[in-house]
Image (cartoon, helix red, strand yellow):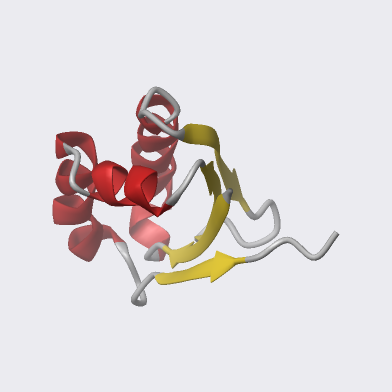
Length: 95
């Protein structure tokens, strides 16, 4: 199992649109082969802040996901919506 967490900061004027884009991405990504979990969260106190939490069977599943057309479409939109570069980190389970 591979776990990925990403932190995304939207510009204040694009937070609502970012929420829609990320929610749609999560719904579509859950159908990708090897996806065990794909959740997106918006900070209730700081609505420009988003976190995605993904669990995948293996690196090949992540690679296929990243090459998928629905991901490419989102990545093309992200530069117009973010206030800072997204931070994407792999995580490992300790327990």
